[in-house]
Length: 357
Image 1 (cartoon, rainbow, N blue to C red):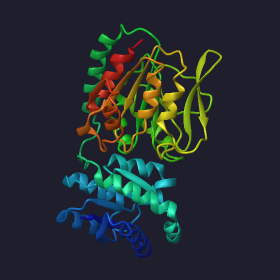
Image 2: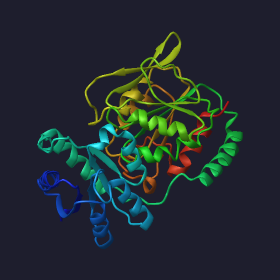
Image 3: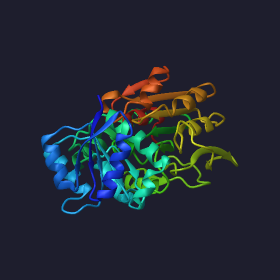
């Protein structure tokens, strides 16, 4: 049976184009259309859809306001943002992801450009992931009380982690659901973490700098978008630029960031496999690999190759806490996971494995 989709967009032409794309795939059927957030809210209050394709800029109630109202009323919906704002307005996109949107696509300014095969294929691919994803639990945010509890947890865990020896590094991979999930991990890491942290989050160019800034404002550790030539330092989190592959290379006895412009791998760019494989010849005593929510299998091949040459410890996010149980599932099925833990426990396992200064 075809999945039921709600399309929300104030432009009649754009609604028609998006509906044509969706209904060109026999897996999907446009069940309803809405011209703004108010109409969509009324429909979502009465009906259940497998996914919602949501614009941002609309009269009366915009996309972000709708997400807030869904959160307030505890109406769960699998939402995919499709807006011209989602490219230049990286902050808007991150706001939408925090409010429960599961993924996003940049809509060309010209509706006719949406008919290009590249846009059509990407939209249908993302929609298929959103349809199959876990509906968000609206209302779950990283509150001040949770921050205080987190600090106490860090203090307790750090006492047991102070004896960890050796030169270690954390390498984390995430995709769909990752930006929000990272807010449950990175702010829980202490500033005296005894290892650098590398992150490959599947995002296009132009979004990862905003993601880094947001995480940095919430965290004790320093979070930055990794720049070419950055020297890795303990207690710093390096997020790969969108649209390029992040590798680690040795230069004058130091580990530095190096980007390559190779083709997509596993259908993504950046690809975590490159990050893991670039650590194969490093002198780290152990690489702590973390694989979190996301579609596909990125990370599995790279971790398998890394394990052939390095001592590693692999932490996979537990299924019920993933927006999409694809990447962690792949690692688990390949029998590479040493631990399978819920999202809220990932930070403490990182601390226990790499230690504090």
